Length: 362
Ligand SMILES: C[S@@+](CC[C@H](N)C(=O)[O-])C[C@H]1O[C@@H](n2cnc3c(N)ncnc32)[C@H](O)[C@@H]1O
Image 1 (cartoon, helix red, strand yellow):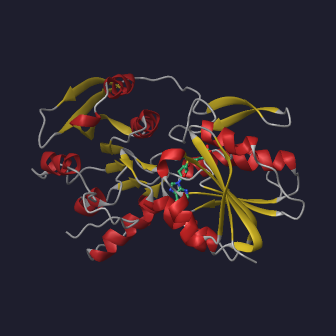
Image 2 (cartoon, protein in one colour; image 1 turned 30 degrees about the horizontal axis):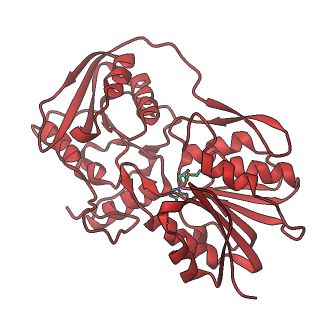
Image 3 (tube, helix red, strand yellow; image 1 turned 90 degrees about the vertical axis):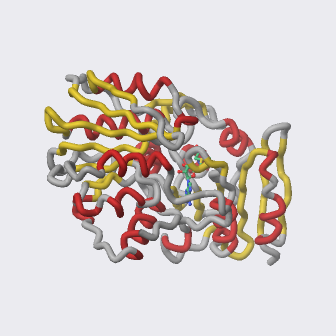
């Protein structure tokens, strides 16, 4: 099979699958799983979906870029997607499953969410196989697995990866899914920001985001604003409180982020986009784009996604429009921003964060 990464990366050391993914195939290779109804969660680029296509599995999709990667890899291997079996982590399984497969994500909250979803749709004698690279192991994995199953069996290491096999479903109590973060905005308004598990910064409003919001002030003529990589939507909410009625667009690659932001914003004149590319959300031009862009992808530090987004922002501003972007000082974004914007100024900074204001010469 030919499996590639979307989004594409220039970094040749990054691969589209890991030994932990291969270990799952090795475990299943005796063929006994063929008659089973399987569900696959957190298949990052589509390696498992393609290799286990013969099982016609249910696929749990969280990121728009993950969906695109899976579609692309199925197509380039001549395999047809069965999109009727693609679900979000918030949906129940469409049919009872005998086999769950989880490539364990970095976020332990998200691991719990995937397990909870499979657990509630698993046959009594079903099993769940979870894979991870040994260097990413945390005891929390076992603790979370133990919340849902009586038997948790850890395999021997193979190519520096391991499997956890979970059997014997426990009866579990329904618990509240949402995290709630109390936050007081600049205007003194106190609210509870809600977010689903796995959404960025689960127990406090991120400090870089707070830094951006402290220095955020809309100009009078700024009426159409994009919160790019919007997460729980807290920056857009700050704008809504500062200037009610502003046309707001929020875009995030994560479905759980977009669904969270819907809980935190007033819906009037607010548009939510589950996407990883501004060019795909419509023919909009913005007076202002605000962002705390991503620089991590799972266990990888990756600034390529942010740089691609900067290029897209440059093409989506109205004449005279601004792009406000907060970043950790060490990321060195200025060089990239200067490539795409004719003006790149530091409007605020401290020992940790820097806030850039970018625009194009009129
Ligand atoms: C640093 S967080 C900021 C979230 C939110 N604005 C906040 O301040 O809490 C970055 C966000 O970028 C999202 N993301 C990653 N790649 C993306 C892409 N290509 N397009 C849009 N969002 C993306 C992640 O899902 C994450 O929610």
